[in-house]
Length: 160
Picture 1 (cartoon, rainbow, N blue to C red):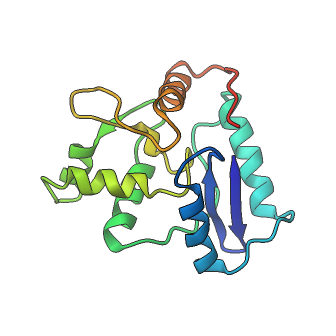
Picture 2: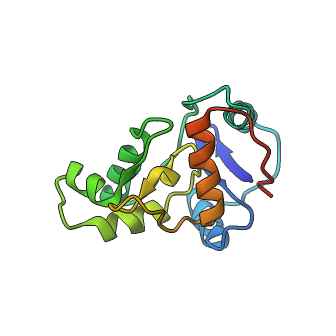
């Protein structure tokens, strides 16, 4: 995974093989300017919390986040953060909670624009019929993340 942070918080946490990564990096560049590799307290906290998540010792994240999007996107991303560990919800349910019934596709687009994988848990959103929908990190990774959260045990997975 790759992470980008500033003193304000984590702005990107993404799988390096995600097709949207170049687009997301351009967006980050427009927010912060040049992205320079270096150590940072937020990045250290990100690594620690993700290590704890993957080892089955963390269910919630305490990282400061830099979320930048439209009003609608921001509302979707806030709803994603309310989905409990080990649970799922549907695009339709999120649209309804946002008082936008019928906006499931727009929720899906906002979900796909999420730049902070796992921590803003877009992987917890599935189709209304319970089937897996697309995931920027790929459906196998989404299945693994959901299984990991349901089992609550340490599992090995190559996230490169």
